[in-house]
Image: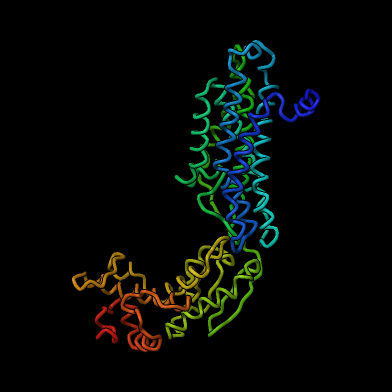
Length: 435
């Protein structure tokens, strides 16, 4: 028993194994659970996986920070004979070793939990990894774990664990409240995918910030343990630099995403509508064409259909996307985990049918005879939209005033009343099959 324990000790020393194995096991289980459903997602890509390294770490890093706080509170409290302020053990070597062991085990468990998703992306994913996003997320994981240790050293008791976990959870959640925090946290408030990735400036700033934070926190630990406490010039400079680094993104926020502008397109044409996707999404092209064509065909006016249906991963700038309707382009976002059977017919129908919010109803649609005229007209638009979507799904649906109506009847009515329909002037009683 003793030789075995001696051989194992360098892996854990000076932390008892259970203090790192339990949180590491929890982190591994959390990561596998949260990513397992992603393995069967459509359109996986490396850009999305790179962003997920930070996004999936939100809860695991809280566990790691709590474990670090527990180790610090347990093994640096002044009641221990070997942890008195005058003891050499409380100088930087042992505390830094505490941090290295806890952060190393927890980070290794987190990366192990990401292995199945990484293999799934490697097998059928497109694009290339975003190195700065991955490096920044891993540096942030280590920095926030050390932050948990600092909480434990500062509080020296069981209270350190809830304080550390609460503060770290708050820090990882701040990007959801304001975009400026994205440069100082593990994740973006949005999820990048092929064609649009995290901006390089933001990724590099995050990486530099977390490296600086790790250095400042590592110097803070022995300062808190030392008696008397003397602030060195280097430590003071590091703390001041962290404060400046926190303020800068709020003064001038970084752009979150940048268009990649790379990758060839793969196209197919059907009934005069050309559909193009990023080469990394070539497997989705036939599905997109097969789901969009029945909707355009059911509407019956070729002139109303877009000239092109394009994958948003092919866009090069915002102007190209925002002015897509004027250029006859329907932009379709293809992203990991998307459901084309829901999204493609809906996008095609939205192109053809006026938005009910533009027709004065405030989004309210009702067939009630006592409803406002604008709400009744909106019910016609909503019913037509639902009916068009049902054409791609190959089955009847509850489409309000269009329930049970044949495609020929709808096409004939649209050809006759297309202008009134576009102007939101058609009420339920104006439909020929309801008179």
